[in-house]
Length: 152
Image 1: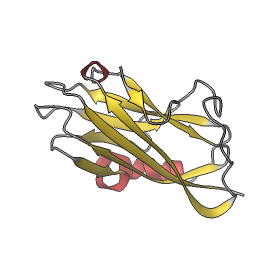
Image 2 (image 1 turned 90 degrees about the vertical axis):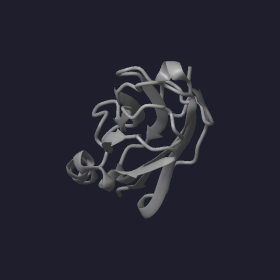
Image 3 (image 1 turned 180 degrees about the horizontal axis):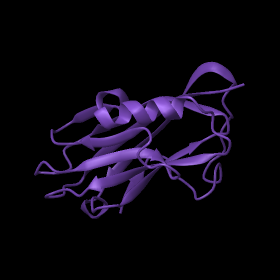
Image 4 (image 1 turned 60 degrees about the vertical axis):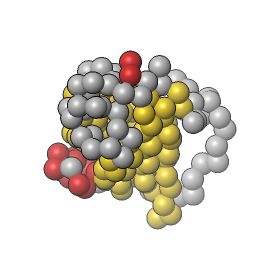
């Protein structure tokens, strides 16, 4: 079972209080580090990252991962529960200590352009989804950083 540096509640803000980000073009970052167990790397498994507030406009997403597949098949997606591959679509984690940015994955370029055009109208939970299961799963660490600003 995954463990989280910052536990994610089922509803926004229930796990811990936070100061709402300032509106305008100030960069905000939703960030979480997840200790991933081998049982978390099956097809369609999900891991929670955290919540984005109303008005958030996502500008970038970066994941950093240790080698969690001793084979070379593990593929992850990152996005809100309403569109799980909106920020990163098809991140192949085939090398140890991989760092993947949304714009560096071909499938993510178009989806990020669409997402960046529309501020969120409700809070959304960001998740990581296993799109292709690990060939030989290994425990590891996954850090997810979602950059955004809050539209006025």
